[in-house]
Length: 134
Image 1 (cartoon, one colour):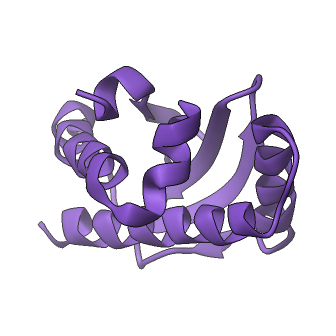
Image 2 (tube, rainbow, N blue to C red):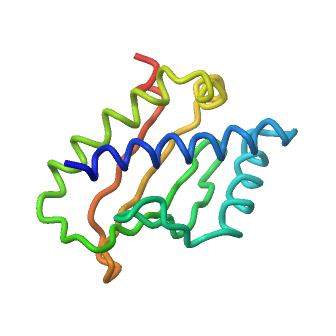
């Protein structure tokens, strides 16, 4: 399904945004995350592909970065299947991509929350240190 390939592109783009922002920041991990959220939110909402819109992001606690997405133009009937296809891609990217070292080094938990166009919650995907440091 093309949506899975598009999701992978979104993941890489979001990680790139965070990494570029991290390299320009100094201070605690939380303050760096806050800066990334502020910069990203200035441009939101942003269509990441034909089905996915990034609405905003936020920092929760010291080491958690949360993305809020809306899936548009399609009706998601099997959230379990879609989530099970997207999560391994997220984990693999954070685990192996050189640009995600900042997450691994600082035990940052990434949270991706998805809603439908009516604002109804669909699912959340979490990439925690214990997931990507296996």
